Image (cartoon, rainbow over all chains, first blue to last red; front, side, top):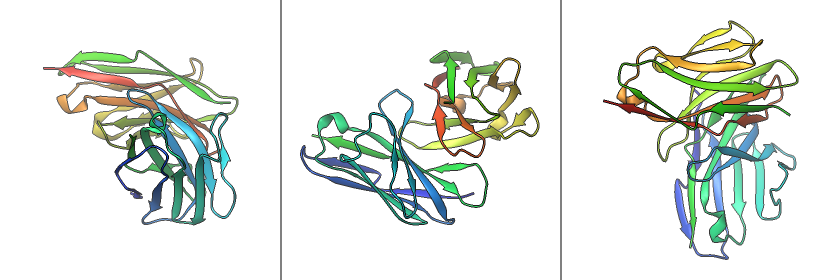
Length: 116
Length: 113
């Protein structure tokens, strides 16, 4: 099946710094990638939809200036958490949608962010 | 907008017993429905999906789910639970060609020996 990777798998940073998380589709092209956030013992919440070559669409309540998304190619989307604070600590999961009409998302393994 | 409700945040069964995890959906158009499993500190693994073909969908690891339009349900079942089935299970819905997927709150399955 299709493989989606995320890097890094975990990161610890100091408050006020920025962290970049990469999401790659390894063996297929993804015109659309999604970014989710999952707090401990909670469900995934969609943060934004990222389309290659265009601006991301953010869900209500998600600060676009804080969570910068760049979908520069058909295999790579990045999420940058700017000026991270402890409340941004979470599990961030990306998914990639196959181009060509199949309505299926393939999920990455997630990135655990801890902000001290 | 589409949504799903998972009844029961925690389900506990004995090894060998029937597993039933409930999911009800809301959608303004014919839905695509999914069940995912998540093990601790890992990403999501697709168990099965319904995409308007057969209403009884068979997935991996012996799981299956039945789409019931009249009940707006898509419950997940497995005839005999195994210890390795202990995990968090998420039901999700997307509306047709709209790729936006919404997740339920999740159900934690515990399997007792």
